[in-house]
Length: 115
Image (cartoon, rainbow, N blue to C red; front, side, top):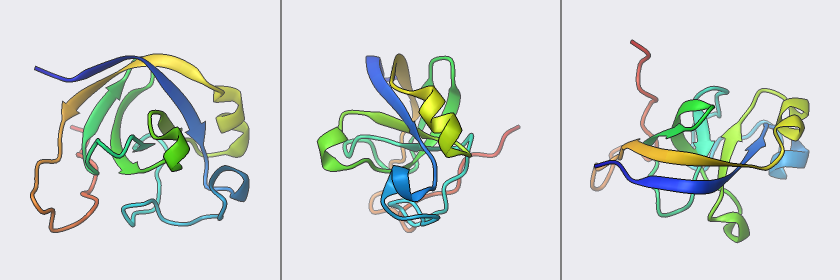
């Protein structure tokens, strides 16, 4: 059975200094963020976990938020304007596949292929 987070707080970010405090840097797991793939998740969710966010689609956990926002999910978008327009939303997040590697050989697996 899949784990479901109802009424989860979803925000968005881009690679700019205003969103991340540094510009064009890798995610917490060392990969460069990719729009349509990368999501920052609570620390309790392992890197590489694949989730479905209601109305947004499938994403792979590749990043983290600041500790004070650890309960949120943050979707990576291609521009600051898009991230600002997204704002703060509440949606359902479903865990589709958890990265169960213990310990993982790579801290951040590649996203699943779209087939």
